[in-house]
Length: 86
Image (cartoon, rainbow, N blue to C red; front, side, top):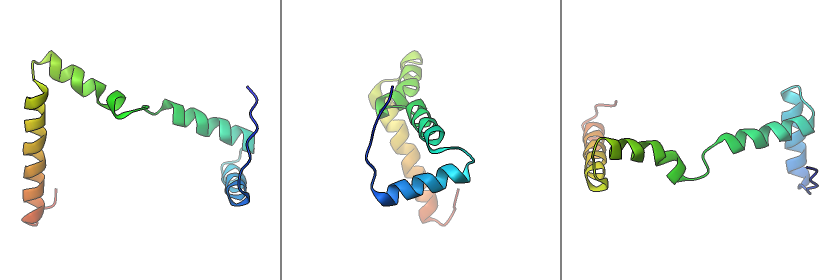
């Protein structure tokens, strides 16, 4: 696929600097950046899919999971308020 994009001069300059710093040409740098981005999860649902699958497999409801997360958050908050950094 061939694409043509217009970049602001500052962005083009940064792009050229980054590509040069990594020892690649601009096209290779852009392709790698796109491939890196596409390896990331596309949504929060995709990120949380393994958690949801596990909670279903062990029989937890969403409400029970919410309670566990809230309890953990409260514990961390209480520890930080008490000066005990984790």
